[in-house]
Length: 222
Image (cartoon, rainbow, N blue to C red; front, side, top):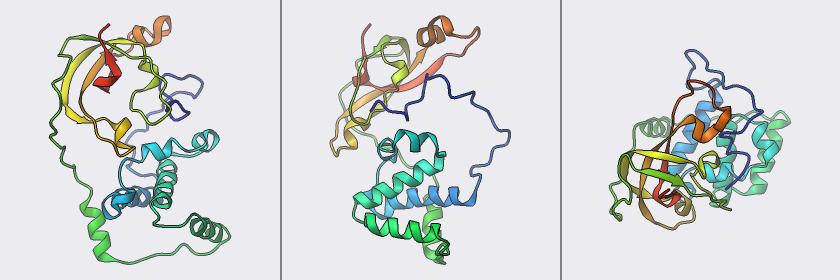
């Protein structure tokens, strides 16, 4: 959906600062949040799937005032409540108790820890049957102008822009519908956009080409 989480191309948020030798996690709780999200997707299928649709439900102020893994933690809580694994009142009560000084509960379970660690490996990519791709490498394409009310993987800043197909990828489920429990399999593409196409006269000299992976239904012939 069009919300504050779709920050690509927006101004006023300051530069992106690259941290040299940045660690995977800056605090231990971030690693635990990451592990919980991955483990929940396997151990609780009803709470599985991508976290992005749940992150998109965060309020604008809350989203901007919290960090990357705080977004993940908020999404996990929403998923578990929605799946009936934990009650909303139960979660709020425990949060209030910990905020008031109650010790954070710990659990030593070697089998669960081994299971969680086993999940940190590349997942196989499903090979799905779908209609043949409409576009080929080097074809010009234009991103449709669209304003979806639900989840989408089409960034707002590329809508209406013209690019060139760099690669045709194997057909996959369209995420926009998958989060609703519907399946539509279609090709997706790596599309290159020149900086002037995206930023116009504001493009900096020597700015890099931007490559975005886009599903076929986002694209049309120019």
